[in-house]
Amino acid sequence: MKIFIILISLLTFCTNQEKFQNGDIIFQTSLSSQSQAIQLATKSKYSHMGIIYLVNEKYFVYEAVQPVKLTPLDEWIARGENGHYVVKRLKNFDPLTGDVMKKMKAVGNKYLGKNYDLYFEWTDAKIYCSELVWKIYKRGAGIEIGALQKLSEFDLTNPIVKNKLKERYGDDLPVNEIVISPAAMFNADKLFTVFSN
Image 1: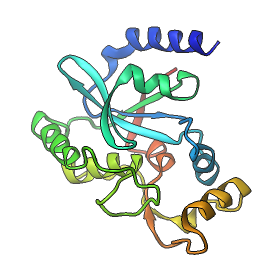
Image 2 (image 1 turned 30 degrees about the horizontal axis):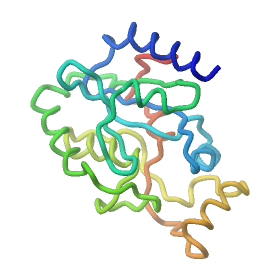
Image 3 (image 1 turned 180 degrees about the horizontal axis):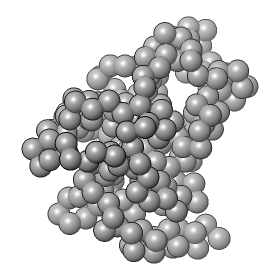
């Protein structure tokens, strides 16, 4: 059944890929061990994201996993839950000229190969998925997508969330840590949906 779903997703991808552009933002539900905790804490279906780049006529997702890397789009889609994904784009796409996109890619390249940030710290030493995309847009194009929040603003009451936080932080939860979540970016009013399967 999973193979069938992946095949359908790939066929859908092939017929819709011409709709994608450099700088589009793609979301999925990750199958990682932290995905459910992220979904519960942020009250969102989506727990992973990246930015789409067209490289040599092929689509890739620049993403923060372990380590930060460029992943072929079809592989990225297949890694998500049931091959489901959503692609969003700036409502006013005009600012993303060739020069701006070059700057965005240059900003992103500084993170290439860096370790994934399991602690969601707002530093550049390590980086997590939504932080990568947010910083590429902010530092490369001067555009903030989604509101930054403190960790304490999320719903940390669910036992699954509590257990994951305890596993990561012990008794030293950094409640004032600034974070950007996939949910905040997914719901940003600056974006519109290009494609959803």
